[in-house]
Image (cartoon, rainbow, N blue to C red; front, side):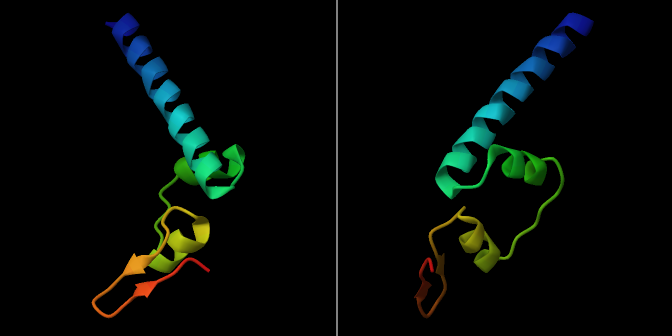
Length: 68
């Protein structure tokens, strides 16, 4: 029903807001920037993910690339 769809939409927005806040806190990015990045497909290379602050480093067969 329409009410069920509305409830699900509110739940999705609630969870998206929480994820945005957590990523913002962990990366030092503004919530606005994280929200904008999450509103569209944003593909990152491993190094871009390090630079963004999503991951600490990249492990490959030879070594760990540390966070700059």
